[in-house]
Amino acid sequence: MTHSRLQFLQQLALCALLLMPSAFVVAHGEDDTDEGVVTPQDIEREEFVVPWIDTENAEISIFGGGINFDNFSTEGSYGASLAYHVNEDMFLELTYLESEVSDFELRSLGAPQFPSEVEPVYYTSLSMGMNMLPGEIFILDRWVLSSTFYLIGGVGNTDFSEDDKFTFNVGFGYRVYLTDWLSLRLEARNHMFENTIQGEESLRHNFEFRLGTSVFF
Amino acid sequence: MRKFCPGWLALLITLLPMTAFWSGSGSAHGLEFIVDTTFIDMHTGPGRGFPKFYSIAKGEKLTAIKQRTTWIKVETTKGRTGWIKATDLQNTRTLNGRAVRLP
Image (cartoon, rainbow over all chains, first blue to last red; front, side):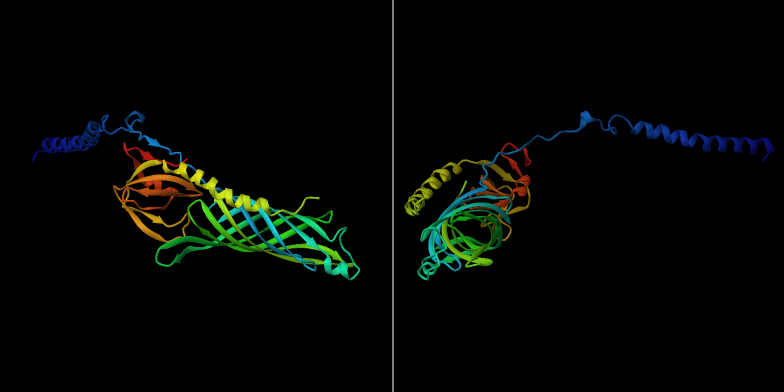
């Protein structure tokens, strides 16, 4: 092979090497047409709906029961409450309760505590409840009712004998759903406030039991 | 001084269930959806702790009746009624094929 022929082949190989990338770019460029480019107009936007569904997070209750006033008497009580269920675990509840209290025993010993023997009691509170142990109860073979146990506690005011007492309350309850919107509630609470009786001030525990019915709306 | 009078309590106990019947009667109407995932679990009550008792299969139609917190009461065309998670409704489509999003 002559020198000029070898030189020609070298130049040819060099040209081939130089042209190869540009050929690749051209080939690649041919693929990179409009089909490959995603533009906003090409995106299919899916239509969706946001349904409006009736909510039932509020609950109104009425109840009756009995309350034992520490050092005084045990009396009937009744009231109503309004609750809002924040989520499946937690609810907030405003309660109004009426009862009466008698100082009959201390009065008979010559130490009346109230202006009159029987005084009305008005109680308001804001409490937070926590649902726990949800489940079902079975009545014979025919009925199955949803139920839940709950703990509840909060603060409020007890108004009796022309005096306001800041009151803590803690308790527990059991709720049975008769339907989705109607439930029965059995509840026990301890209402605690400081009170002075015959010169001795201490925390008084006033236990209350109640049975009520509630409606969700 | 107010007189202790439990009479109104008895009256309220009588009237309260009646108001509930009125509120319950309005819940029969709902929106219809078709399940667009393998299945959706149905619970007996509006909470994760209530037992699962049915799985709504893909393609089955359900009607949303009402919502309590993050749970929706539904009824299937097969007559099952229970509660599903509200987020599960996003795994359904409307009858005309639209996706469902929650507010």
